Each structure stands twice: as structure tokens, then as C-alpha cells.
View (spheres, rainbow, N blue to C red):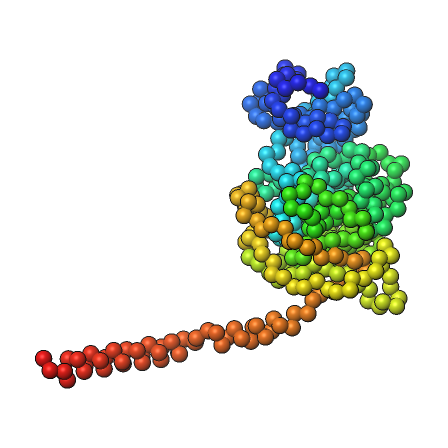
Length: 386
């Protein structure tokens, strides 16, 4: 391990360890030439070739949602990758706060933007390793995606393969291709990987956890206040056998943007989704799991007022967020999204007008009060003896 205080290439002063990953150690460092903070990945020789190949594919990337690369320093036993330093929250921190649905939708849209940029005709790069370690959110609310074109974390994707019926041989598509090179299957892998990340932000979990494990029953367990439409979009991205499966970042982005227009920032009434078959006699659960006996109840979704892009005071907004719901709802993987009965809502709306006084009525009451005061004053001035 490289010690803090060391100067790399007579330029980069290693100040502190940010994170220890399986293939590298990440330091916060000072670029003593440009006097700016950077991050330095210290990569042992065993993994150097994969990182060098990834840098060759992504060195020209310039996108607000992608972490920039500044320098590459090669030594006999170690490779140093100098990157933009991102001051913000890692994905594990985002998991510890129940983010409003609109913010989670926005996270998905921003990651889609990075994937679409990398996969454009002039670049043709897939991420391939879109895990929680690849995602951060900076203090401005921008999602920053890192680790493009690196080898897939097979242990992570194998662990999540039980969701959506992914077989072991389909965890990574087109294995004959070099890491990072685009194909239709690789694009679908990235889209599903993003769906898994969004699910983890929406999943029922113990407050304060820094990671989410895939459910042992193979079903998606959403928090009770998650909008049903968002549950459906995430399920369509994750479940490859879904008849309306979302397999591209462009389609997922379009679906999320359309949903964002329907979500009201202050608060809304929503439920977690329960996936049921259109015809119980003809359709079965994808994973062979029975349907829930009861649908979830409707609860009011308590959220802060947010824009599509979170404001600059993200930290204070997270501190004010509500704690997690005590019990999650469960979404089954049959393809029709059920919604709860909302027949009471028109009744509430019908009662609303009766609780408000019209302007003419207010004027009439005012005139009556004025007349009463006038009569009392006249009586006191003219009738009572002086």
C-alpha cells in the first residue's frame, strides 16, 4: 500500500485514503502544479492492463455525469490513474436516506444520460460494471458515474441474478468482446444494472444500512410509499422476460422523464406496486412465486418539495428526510400492475367546496356586522341620556 505523504511523479501529493476497493486503493491528493484536489487510484500490476485498456476507451470523455480522467502514470509495479475529485456522497450514503421518489427518478435520468453519451455512434462504449461503487452524487446534486469499461464485478452480478430470472450464462453478455466495447447485449446489461441500482434505493430495508442484498425469495420488495408507476418501470428494467422489458438507456430515460412530469414535488398519494397476472389461469409468476393475498394499503407519501435536479443544499435536505417505513410492500413479477381502490378521493373532493366560504357570502356577513355596529352606535349617541 502506498503511504500518505508520498509525492507521485513529483506532482501529486497523496493526502488520505478515500476508499479501499478490490482492485485498487483510492486516495485524495493535491496536484501541486495546478493547486487543485484530485483523486488518485493506485492499481497493482495484476490489474493494470484492464485499467489501461479502460483509459484508452474513455480518455476523451467529457460529460457532466461522468468522472473526468486527468493523468496516467505507469511504474513497473504500479499504475496511477489521476481523476477528478468528487466531493459528495457515495451510493452507500444515499441508501441511508429515504430519498423522495422524484430524486430517485432524477438519479436514473442522469445515469441514463451518461450511458447514452458513452454509447453514442462516435464512442460505442458500454459501462459493463455499473455497481454501487461506480455512483456518487456531488454537492450540486449531479450524479457522477465512474469505472467505465472495467471488467464486470461477476460476484455482484451473480448475486443479483436471482432477480428477474437471469441464468448464470447470461450475467454478462457477449463475453468474447473486450471489456467496454458496445453491443446490443452489453447495452441491455447496463440498463438492467441501472434498474438494480434504482431498486436498491427503493427497496424495503433496515434504516442506516450501507448496502442492500437481493431478496432470497427473488421478488422485489418496495417501500410502501413508492409510486406504483415507478415500481413498474424498475421491474421492466430488471426482469428480462417482462413483455415490456426496457433494454436500452434511451427508453429507460424516456420512461423516467415522463414519470417525473406526473410526480408532484410537495407530496403525493402512492402505493408500492403488486404485480399480478392479467389472467390467473394462463399466466404464472416468472420466478414461480405465488401472488400476495392482499394488496398494500394506501399511505400518504411524506416528501420534501424538490425539483427534478436536487438543489445545492443536498446535505440539509437529506438530514430532514423522513425515516424508513417500518414495513415494505412486496412486488410480485407478473406483469400487470395493480392499483389500490381510491374511491374515497372523489368524496373528499366533493366535500371540499362546502368547507370554503364564497366571496359574496363574506361580503354579506361583513355588511351585517357593519349594520349591527352602526345601530349600537346610533343608540348610544341619540337615545341614552347624556
